[in-house]
Amino acid sequence: MYKVFFNRTEFQIIDEQEFMRFNPYYVKLIRISRLPTEETLRSWLKEDREISYVLPVSSVKKTWKEFKSKFRIVVAAGGLVTNDNNELLTIFRNSMWDLPKGKVEEGEELVEAAKREVEEETGVKVDEVIIDLSWKTFHVYILKERIILKKTVWFFMKARSGNMAPQLEEGITEVKWMDKDQIMKVFNQNTYATTINLLDSAALPNYSSM
Image (cartoon, rainbow, N blue to C red; front, side, top):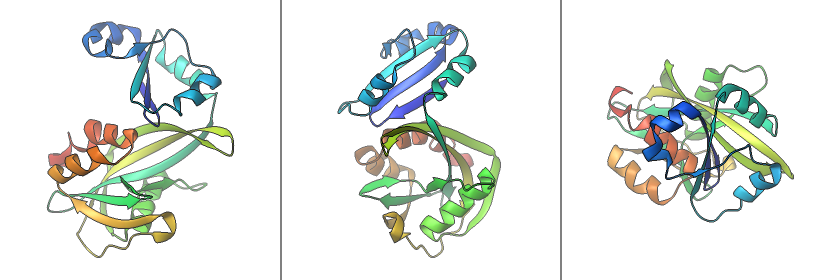
């Protein structure tokens, strides 16, 4: 199954057998019968309400490959970073709460890119990257009239609560360690749908083991 966010619109490509098994959940989504056109994709980016679509298919891999062909692909990497107090490292970027991440440079390994971005954006020194724990998110945006699909690979990391220095030139004005209750309160009020999904699906369920 693949899940892609278009601002507030969510789109899932799912195996049709899984769709049938979990129908009580997926019945809440709007079922579509074919991949959306580029015109439709662009319209999803303009939706001002939360809406979810699901496309059940016989071959998720084949459909995903066809879907990706509609976009220019950008790859990024980021960190789900916790300290000894089991707090998560967060940033306030461009008036939204977020998690540290950034574009992977040419020839750079994903894990090294994730570590570099965390340290550059927050000033926090990463002590450990848990290689076997990672998560992927996908979201779409427009850049210079081109439609972009960004894939972000997230790695679980450990760091000490040392000095923090927000990367102001990247629009980051605050770096903050938050406990689980703070995250649920603050992020639910002011963050991106992609980030909420990441927290709900990966960060918070693995909180005690991070």
